[in-house]
Structure formats: structure tokens, C-alpha cells
Length: 484
Image 1 (cartoon, rainbow, N blue to C red):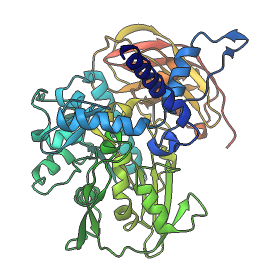
Image 2: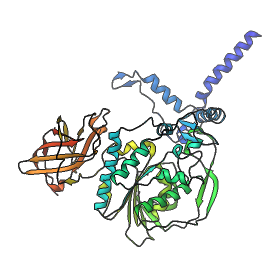
Image 3: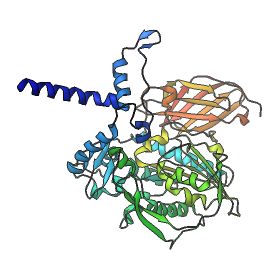
Image 4: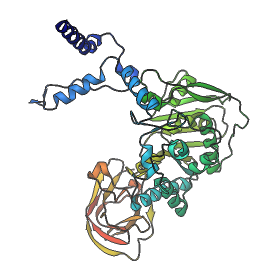
């Protein structure tokens, strides 16, 4: 009897282990369920050599294709998240059914604090963007979107201690000091959160929060706009939150959403071209599918004026799309860490929206913008020695960049680059940005700029860089004027 039990137990054990393999040809693709690219099958031989990472790569490939994986994850997270309220699948369980992105805790506790130089660099960068827009007779506003935990901290677990200041508050203070126009969305949402403005089971605001935010953005731009006050809505429990999908790839819980009964003006998509069903495409762009949405261009057929909008946005900007489209004749929405200022036409408004957790991305790479010329460099500057500068011909312009000493004083946060030779000199203000993709390493202080080819700079130039009250002798630059 005991031997028979052992045989049956062993048979059941091996059958359970073999079941996933047997089911592989018959179950729905995990790529369809989890909406992500699956790991490719690794090669045993790579570049003519034995792939020493094959076992690890194969495990990842197999795990991505394990039948019933999403159901098993959902069951495990139901126990961990809903019953034990412990973090799982990059999600933190709060009180009252609220769940949060795990990364929200970093800003909440200020454990991801940017350096003073980085805060100053971000503020100066935004001030240069604002200057560029204003020079084209447009209006500029910066919209830092608060993390969900920053607005609904009362539902965030008490085991996390909220910091008195963080990147959001420090950057806003610096923007105010420099006169950069911005929307204090955190202050506004905290003052108006008596009505729920974020989803419980999604990391983003709901459509009511977006409507409130839209009005704040338009007021910040100083533009007449439709307020949609008094618009009726249906409050339906039909929203599947991104956080809920992380917890429960198969099944899950629905959230409430506001569906406004607003008759928007007719419009068409200019980017992507050839869109058939405009309303269906808009719904796709407003969802979390994130398909072909890096550049969205629209033309409003009901708008008689020639108003234009260039909006840098992230996933929070999805819910703003119908309101912004309805108020501008032409609009361009881009998802990027590198604003293309050449796309900001004369008289255009520019909105730069980015979520709190990604504020450091504002200085991840320098915006596509020709450096403004200045009349003079700082008069008093301590000799900082030599500095390696790189001049790279990008085809459309010469990019000049380099790293600054890590111990450089913050000063006013501005960086000037002077090019001089026997024929004269040109002084530019550069973005105070360390180009990680170009320089490598983990530096935090640097500069980057592009020279407008229309200036016709040609020949050998001595380079001097001014930053933090110091002057540095840079590498000689050889510039070649381009035909216009």
C-alpha cells in the first residue's frame, strides 16, 4: 500500500511538471494577454562561440511562454496584494482599495533626490525653452504631473515616511525664481481632491481630473478656452487600470471612469496619415495600448483661427487629448525626452507635461534647439583649467558638448561657450546638460548646444566654457559653414 502511494504520488508530481509543456500548443499567447514583447529563443551558438548565457536566456524564454502564467500570477497577487497587502508586481497596496506604483515611494521619501546642480540644470533648460517660444510670439508652460502617492498620501502605507521636500517641490521653487511659467498641479489637485481625481487602480488621473487639469493649463497659457463647465457625464465602472493589469494579467477589478457628454468639433489626424475612423483612433490613443503614438498631429475643421499647439507629453497627456484638440486649429503631441523646438512654429503655444517620477528626464538629453547667442560672457570667472569639448557634425548642425567637473559650484546654473579667432568671437548659452548617451559614464554635470548653420561660422576657433563662476579652456574647434 505504501509503495503504491509513492508510485501514484510520483506520477502526479511528474504529470504536474509536464502539464505546462503539454499545454503550450493550445493556450493563448502570453504576448496577447500581457501586451508585451516576449523574449526571443536564444541561440546555443552566438558569434561562433558557445553561448554561456544560454540557460539563463532559455529560462526567460520559457517563463514568458509558460501556459497559465497570467492566471497563476493573478492568483498569487490576489493573495499577496488584496489579502496580505504586501507589495507585488511593482505595485504597493494602500488603504481603501487604493494601489500605487512601487516607484512612487522614491519621490514620496525623496530617496531619488536630484543634486542641486541637476535641479538648477532642469530649471535653466526649461527657461531656455520658454525664451525660444516667446521669441516666436508664443506662450509656454511647464506641467509637472504629481505621482498618485503625492496627491493621495492618506492612502499610501504609513510605513513610508513622507519627505518635507523632493524633486517636485525643489524644481518648482527654482522655476519660480527664474520666472519660468508652470502649473503647480500638485497644489491644485490637493486643493480639489474632495472629488476623486485619480483612479484607485490606475497610476493616472481620471477624466474629471484631466478636465480640471486642462483648464489649469489653458489658464497658465493665458488663452481664452472652452471650460466645458456644466458638461454632463456618465460615471461607469468600466475602466481597467494599468496597476490592476500588473497585478492581475488575467482578470482583475474594474474602476470607475467619468465619460463626458461633450460634442467636440470635427477634426482629422494629420499624423499618422490616412486614419480612417477618427473617433476609434482617438480612443486607441487615449488607451494604454501606446500604439504608434509617439507623434500625433491633428487639424480642427471647426476652428476658424490659426492657433497652434506643440505639446510634449507622457501617458498623463492621453486624457488631455480631446480637450486640447478641440481648442487648437493645429496641434502636435509628441512623446519624447528631447523636445524639437524647430517644430514650434511662429505664434505656437508649447506645453511640456511630464510626471513627477520622471523629472530627471528633462535633462536626460539636450532639446533639439539652436543655442541662443549672448552679447557677453561672465566678466569675473576663476580659471578652472582645461576641459575636453567635443564638436560633432550632425548634418543639420554642429553639436558641441562636454563634461564639467563634478564639484563645480551651482552658481546661476548657466553655461556659456565662447568661440573666438582672429575674425572675432561668438558667445552662446548652452543647455547645462550632461549627454549620457554621447559621453557614457554616470556624470551629472555637463553642457550641450547646437550652432545654427545660418550663422556661417567657418574655420578654427579657440573654445572657452564658463560655468559655476569658472572659465575652462576647451578643445580647439574646427567649424565648417554649411550652405543654406
